[in-house]
View (cartoon, rainbow, N blue to C red):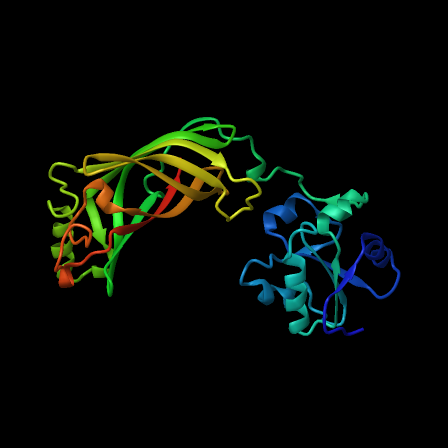
Length: 306
């Protein structure tokens, strides 16, 4: 029976179809391959709907578009099964049903599974103790603007560490090389070195006397109810720049990488003039014309531990 939208079926209804009631049914697990390997419904094939190759795999694993396809994901709270079912219908599969509640509902009602049952990386024990920064994976990107233009670039990450308790960073220290400042949008442009020298000079960061900048994390707490990919850490610390140390607060999105390392990203803006970087500020100078520079500097930070 051809339908123009996916139908939702209960665990009992799906089990009955698998037991021989009604037309034959093929099971499709649309979760990532590692989750499928750990546990999946008996006889299910796998293609992760998050991957762009999802439609390309279907003719190989589900060659007969006349067969009914039973699609399932993780749980009632996630939408991967519904998204995959819509793709199947658009690709011409005649009948597609979605298991209500996904794998969680199947397990809760005693449904059988197969797989390795190995734990996922994010199910490992919480981090505790000190972890050094991976300076190859960690980075700091900056953006500076005036009314019509902007420049963006990077700073060198020298070293750093985070101290964890029960998976939450409770303290840390990071050092940045101000002489390693680069302007990415002027790469290969003769003006690149002119701007960089200007940023290193007394006008901006005065790197002759202040070659490094630093950030000290003083506290972090989990944001209640935050989901993966959202900002889930509320952080407080001190930024040292051009010899001035002042408090800085921001939120970060943090989690564990597939290899088990801790990673966090944050985007924040701060008023450079509070740290004594005054050049081009309309708060301190008049008649600036083309030399006006916005007070706010935007910074995007990625921190990854070893």
